[in-house]
Amino acid sequence: MISIRRFSLSLCAVFSISAGCSYKPGYPNPFAGEVALRVRNESFAPLLGPRVERELRKRMLRSGKISFSENESKSQLTLHVTLRSFSDQTESYRREDSLLAAGYALRISADLRLENAEGKVLLEREASGRSSIALPASDQPFSDDAAMQALAESISSEISLSLSGVDW
Image (tube, rainbow, N blue to C red; front, side, top):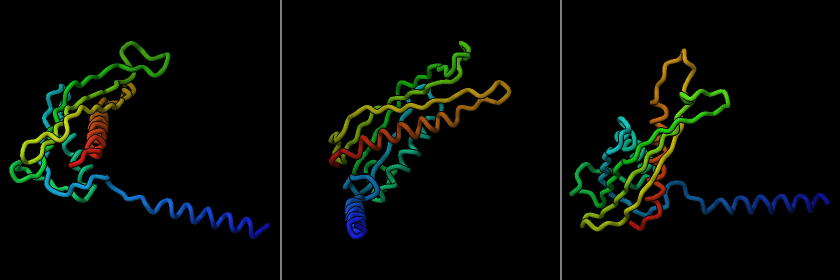
């Protein structure tokens, strides 16, 4: 009885170890080279463009294969991100919340265009991001920095996921 239990436990251990061997951290994208990143903010979200650019650079640098170039003529690829359609809608979370809202739901959409050095469009897609912010009690100051940062992280995550399936 003990040997069967020991055998089944060792068999489970072998299967669990061998199943994890094919995992490779990072993005599955085989591209390694220079990318020019251009983020243009055409939305009404204040200072969201630089935040999205910073978050997108962080996410793409995690792969370890991509470097960024400020000069489009020296880069192999150019990624154009145009932020559009920022909206903030009121939300109420409890029955007692007033009509003045207990929080906001923030949404942003972006147009993506990935081009190679010859100008051929490799990807043209739309991505969207969302975050929420709850308003603090009336005796505390209100700042939407955390919500804007969460919105930048959300749209950057969506953009990087859109890029991971592209054959560069």
